[in-house]
Image 1 (cartoon, rainbow, N blue to C red):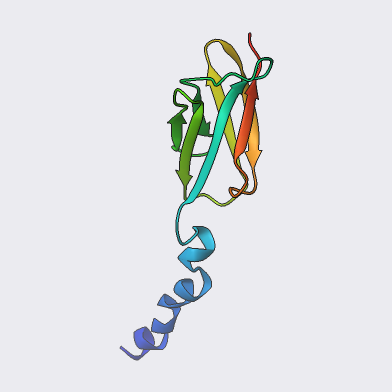
Image 2: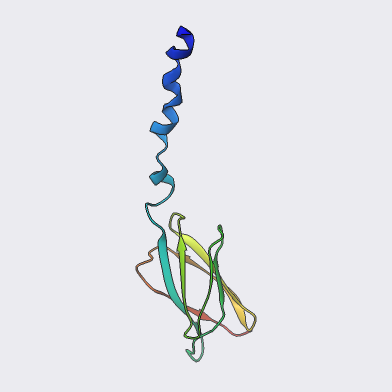
Length: 106
């Protein structure tokens, strides 16, 4: 029994090394933006926006606005797709700045 208790402190070592807040932020990051036509500035409705390395996704509304919440560390890469426009990929480093995404028609 002495040999088991002598090494029981090893169980606590991973908890001391990895803190969950080091991996995930304390609350989700909210990314907001709008999707517009690159040539005329009109809002693009139903653009599909998703984070490349996760399951977070959104559709832009009638006004082109979207919101995605993620637990991932920044920066994250967004993919924006719409059947009438060329796909676009952007990196989000600072969620405080609202993203304006200009899509080029196909």
